Length: 193
Image 1 (tube, rainbow, N blue to C red):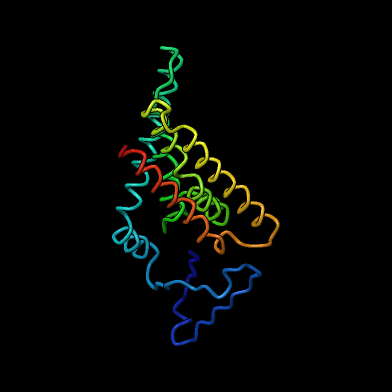
Image 2 (image 1 turned 180 degrees about the horizontal axis):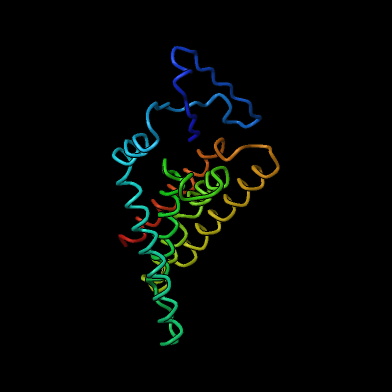
């Protein structure tokens, strides 16, 4: 959000907004709010605060579980399957926060965190597939490896296209979604076996 302070001498004048960018998002203009800064943030928190709270809770839960899993791994010298779920919750939390209207408060660079949201979409199903593979004692490991590799190839290809300025992440979201949905669908089918 960009806050513009208006003074009493601005009353009755026309506000003109000009956008200048070479981004593929040019021409995108979201809802505009008028009022005191705290009133605007209060309105945004009332309408989107639950999402922020859930994202932060998931972030803390994911980090805490990752730390505990690593500690168990060090102390008991064995892998803890729960760590994969913790990474999945962590990635989901970052995705929620990266898409939140509050992202500019949480993260210093809005453009970078916008790209991070796309990475979360591409990688979100990977920890869950690794967890299911552990729970199923490797019974479908080859199939899970194929799906994990598909997700990683999708990540590399979409990132390369984005970095090379050939295609923006927003233009490849359909393919990201297809790969993620396929992975989730496959994982669901394997979990039922």
